[in-house]
Each structure stands twice: as structure tokens, then as C-alpha cells.
Image (cartoon, rainbow, N blue to C red):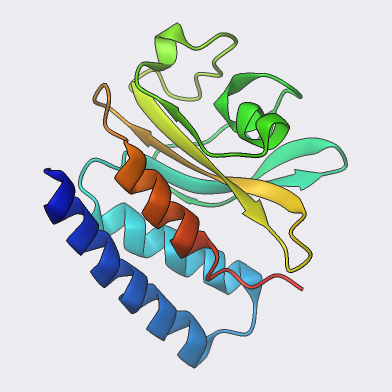
Length: 155
């Protein structure tokens, strides 16, 4: 998908998700489930789409769509922990080249991880998206996914 088409699709998805959560949700768990459902079914290269939340110094799976997920991610390993530790979006074109990559499903080839923050700007988890193709994610994905997860309203 070219950059312009991708940005236009994300813009429409942002508007759709915003309307849904502002109209009907008062719960961050509902917000997360809505974000995941819309993204997973509207972006054809999204193979696994979900949130991991920090729980007692661990990253544990929350809302997701796709194949079975790892429930706990070992501290300071893999792309999700890189997003937490670096406190920024991480794009990996080939997960097999990423040190300590955690393979919950061997079909995943590329990944993007976006830190999720609460209303105090504290990182409380990540949005994690995997693709079965190499180099699926770019700056356009990062920009729009960062905007979209701001629609998840945590106290």
C-alpha cells in the first residue's frame, strides 16, 4: 500500500474509532478492544494486533486479535520491552534480526510497537502489531498508530 493510500485509510479509521469510543465507551478496556477490532479487520497486513499492559513489572497480554498470544513477555527482551525501555515507537522490518525477539507465532516477520500512556503521560503498556510480511511498517504506521492509541482513555 502506498504512503498516501495508507495515510488516508488511517485517517478514516481514526475518525471511525474516535466516534465509537466517544459515543459509547467510558472504559479503557472497551476503548482498547474497539481499537484492536477496527485496526485488525481494516488493515489487511495486520496479522496479530493487541495490547500488552505492565502488571507488577511484567508485560501481560490484554485485548488482542489474531493467533494465540504469549501471556507474559520476559522483562527487557523482545520488541515490546524495547518500546517500554526506549519509551518510543519501535519498527522492526525483520524480527529474525532483532536481538532477543520473542516469537509467539513463527509466521510473524515484521513488527511495530507503540508505547501506551495514561493521562499522566506514564507508559503503562504497548500496542503491538505483527505482520507475516517483511518490512510492513513505516513512519506512516507509527504516526497514525500513535494518534489512534491516544483515543484509549486511561485515568
